[in-house]
Image 1: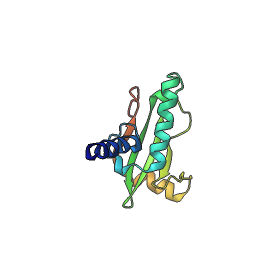
Image 2 (image 1 turned 60 degrees about the horizontal axis):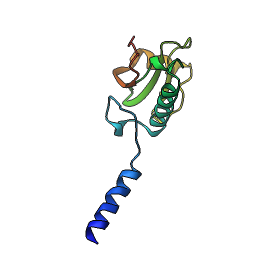
Image 3 (image 1 turned 90 degrees about the horizontal axis):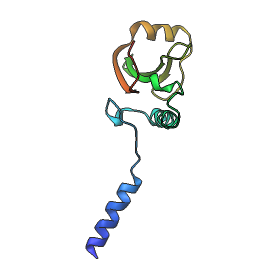
Image 4 (image 1 turned 30 degrees about the vertical axis):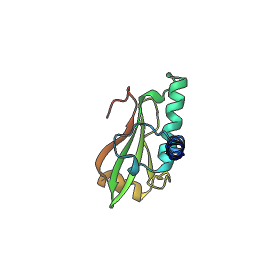
Length: 118
Protein backbone atom coordinates (compact mmCIF):
# COMPACT_ATOMS: atom_id res chain seq x y z
CA UNK A 1 0.00 0.00 0.00
CA UNK A 2 2.85 2.36 0.85
CA UNK A 3 4.49 1.78 -2.55
CA UNK A 4 1.20 2.42 -4.31
CA UNK A 5 0.77 5.72 -2.46
CA UNK A 6 4.33 6.79 -3.35
CA UNK A 7 3.82 5.83 -7.00
CA UNK A 8 0.51 7.69 -7.11
CA UNK A 9 2.08 10.82 -5.55
CA UNK A 10 4.97 10.74 -8.03
CA UNK A 11 2.59 10.31 -10.98
CA UNK A 12 0.43 13.19 -9.77
CA UNK A 13 3.52 15.38 -9.47
CA UNK A 14 4.58 14.62 -13.06
CA UNK A 15 1.12 15.29 -14.44
CA UNK A 16 0.72 18.58 -12.60
CA UNK A 17 4.06 20.06 -13.70
CA UNK A 18 3.78 22.53 -16.57
CA UNK A 19 6.16 22.22 -19.50
CA UNK A 20 7.69 25.59 -20.23
CA UNK A 21 10.05 26.43 -23.07
CA UNK A 22 13.80 26.43 -22.52
CA UNK A 23 14.79 29.79 -21.07
CA UNK A 24 18.27 31.28 -21.01
CA UNK A 25 17.66 32.78 -17.55
CA UNK A 26 16.13 30.97 -14.57
CA UNK A 27 12.47 30.10 -15.21
CA UNK A 28 11.57 31.63 -11.84
CA UNK A 29 12.64 35.04 -13.20
CA UNK A 30 10.31 34.88 -16.22
CA UNK A 31 6.80 36.27 -15.58
CA UNK A 32 3.87 33.96 -16.27
CA UNK A 33 2.45 36.14 -19.09
CA UNK A 34 5.77 35.89 -20.93
CA UNK A 35 6.00 32.12 -20.43
CA UNK A 36 2.54 31.77 -21.92
CA UNK A 37 3.35 34.04 -24.88
CA UNK A 38 6.56 32.14 -25.64
CA UNK A 39 4.77 28.79 -25.38
CA UNK A 40 2.13 30.08 -27.81
CA UNK A 41 4.80 31.29 -30.25
CA UNK A 42 6.64 27.97 -30.07
CA UNK A 43 3.45 26.13 -31.00
CA UNK A 44 2.99 28.41 -34.02
CA UNK A 45 6.61 27.89 -35.08
CA UNK A 46 6.24 24.14 -34.71
CA UNK A 47 3.11 24.04 -36.85
CA UNK A 48 4.34 26.62 -39.39
CA UNK A 49 8.12 27.20 -39.50
CA UNK A 50 7.65 29.87 -42.19
CA UNK A 51 5.41 31.97 -39.94
CA UNK A 52 8.04 34.68 -39.49
CA UNK A 53 8.34 33.95 -35.78
CA UNK A 54 11.35 31.72 -36.42
CA UNK A 55 13.64 34.73 -36.15
CA UNK A 56 12.55 36.22 -32.84
CA UNK A 57 13.71 36.62 -29.27
CA UNK A 58 12.75 38.06 -25.90
CA UNK A 59 15.37 40.23 -24.21
CA UNK A 60 15.38 41.37 -20.58
CA UNK A 61 16.79 44.72 -19.46
CA UNK A 62 17.11 46.35 -16.09
CA UNK A 63 16.13 49.98 -15.58
CA UNK A 64 15.35 51.86 -12.36
CA UNK A 65 15.92 48.63 -10.40
CA UNK A 66 13.12 46.87 -12.33
CA UNK A 67 13.06 44.35 -15.18
CA UNK A 68 11.61 45.13 -18.60
CA UNK A 69 11.22 42.85 -21.60
CA UNK A 70 11.69 43.55 -25.27
CA UNK A 71 10.33 41.45 -28.12
CA UNK A 72 12.48 41.39 -31.23
CA UNK A 73 11.62 39.92 -34.60
CA UNK A 74 13.84 40.37 -37.65
CA UNK A 75 10.83 40.29 -40.00
CA UNK A 76 8.82 42.93 -38.15
CA UNK A 77 8.77 46.40 -39.65
CA UNK A 78 7.86 47.88 -36.28
CA UNK A 79 10.52 48.62 -33.70
CA UNK A 80 11.00 46.23 -30.81
CA UNK A 81 7.99 46.13 -28.48
CA UNK A 82 8.79 46.79 -24.84
CA UNK A 83 6.88 45.49 -21.82
CA UNK A 84 6.97 45.98 -18.08
CA UNK A 85 7.44 43.01 -15.78
CA UNK A 86 3.65 42.98 -15.29
CA UNK A 87 3.13 42.64 -19.06
CA UNK A 88 2.00 46.18 -19.83
CA UNK A 89 3.20 47.49 -23.18
CA UNK A 90 5.29 50.64 -22.91
CA UNK A 91 4.07 53.60 -24.91
CA UNK A 92 6.17 56.23 -26.64
CA UNK A 93 6.56 58.96 -24.00
CA UNK A 94 9.32 60.51 -21.90
CA UNK A 95 9.59 57.41 -19.69
CA UNK A 96 10.07 55.30 -22.82
CA UNK A 97 12.83 57.60 -24.06
CA UNK A 98 14.54 57.49 -20.65
CA UNK A 99 14.34 53.70 -20.73
CA UNK A 100 16.00 53.61 -24.15
CA UNK A 101 18.97 55.70 -23.04
CA UNK A 102 19.39 54.31 -19.51
CA UNK A 103 18.59 50.60 -19.79
CA UNK A 104 21.32 48.13 -18.96
CA UNK A 105 22.16 44.53 -18.26
CA UNK A 106 20.86 42.95 -21.47
CA UNK A 107 20.01 39.25 -21.11
CA UNK A 108 18.37 37.00 -23.66
CA UNK A 109 15.40 35.26 -22.08
CA UNK A 110 14.45 33.08 -25.05
CA UNK A 111 15.37 32.94 -28.71
CA UNK A 112 14.69 30.83 -31.75
CA UNK A 113 17.43 28.93 -33.51
CA UNK A 114 17.39 31.42 -36.40
CA UNK A 115 17.55 34.55 -34.26
CA UNK A 116 20.49 36.86 -34.96
CA UNK A 117 21.20 39.36 -32.20
CA UNK A 118 21.39 42.99 -33.24
